[in-house]
Image 1 (tube, rainbow, N blue to C red):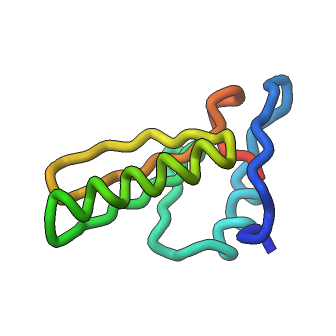
Image 2 (cartoon, helix red, strand yellow):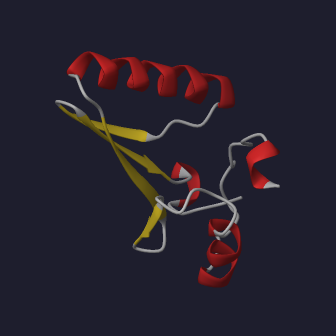
Length: 94
């Protein structure tokens, strides 16, 4: 199961997942994640307060550091957009 795997940062030189591979994996994660341009996963979170949004962002930062894989995080008051992709290959990978 993909949720039990650890992120292994790509060193580059490998191809990103193709559409069929993405579709296979996307079934294993929360349906609210969306594939964008076939190369990114995006999910928006809305919180009751700005402080709750910032606590979430800090939690994401801690997890990202532990995994060695850092998402783009966009903060707009109480809304946080997380964008995931493998930077080295400009796409998605397991």
